[in-house]
Image 1 (spheres, rainbow, N blue to C red):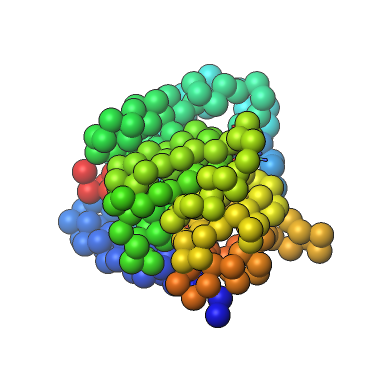
Image 2 (tube, rainbow, N blue to C red):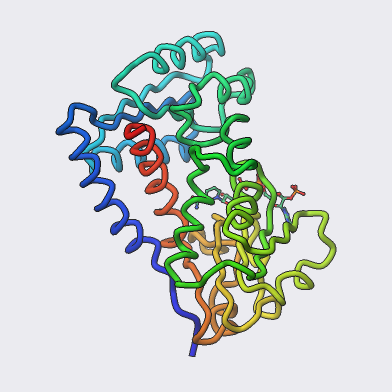
Length: 283
Ligand code: NAP
């Protein structure tokens, strides 16, 4: 028997149902949650992401605005738009879709967003709050991964969790969230000589690398929980993750859990962005 699937679509739907109900209650009290999404440039993948985020807002009864600017839009003008949205009482969350064109400094852009509206959780202030255990808005992808792990029923206290990848947006905040949940955490990266040495004893493995087959069947422990954040294309051009899915699922056995790609982490990322916007509106 193979490992059980963690269904990110179903979990997402359940969480979005709760978000929509809370948004309706807030709206009835005159404070409809509002998200502003800014896209600079014409990257086709980014255009799809922002469209999905705006659509999800509509589905949950949120107010949303999408501001699109061409690739020559300058940094000063972008910062002025962010300042205007910071002051707009109908907007509770602001997101600038990354990457921005090269002439714009992404750090200056992220830091320009008011802390209370930083629904991506990428600012130094939000990262510091996570680091020190203070309340704040958490980056959506690792936040969603925590919900997926929680859905398996595994208590993280005392467990060994391995995170592969150390980006500021996924790997590092993921490690901090697991630490906050009292797991013993190992972080691996491109300089780790033998990933399997760490993952073979792990109760939870979160893979966020962006390379197919980073985690293979010989690298996992039966009964472990595997969260696959990666988004890649296989030889047939189909979306796939960082995990050698079928073989790892078999190696985990019936006590294990694994997220599919697509249908695992992806839908949860937008859901947790909505959760952050709601949290900002409720504050
Ligand atoms: P990133 O910024 O490129 O970071 C990748 C990380 O993987 C880096 O820390 C890198 O190590 C590490 N790495 C690279 N090669 C490795 C190897 N051979 N062994 C071990 N570690 C290795 O990427 P990211 O933004 O974190 O995203 C990671 C993946 O998740 C991508 O496929 C991305 O598309 C996907 N993603 C999905 C969602 C979603 O909603 N589903 C959201 C965000 C990201 P160094 O630090 O040493 O370079």
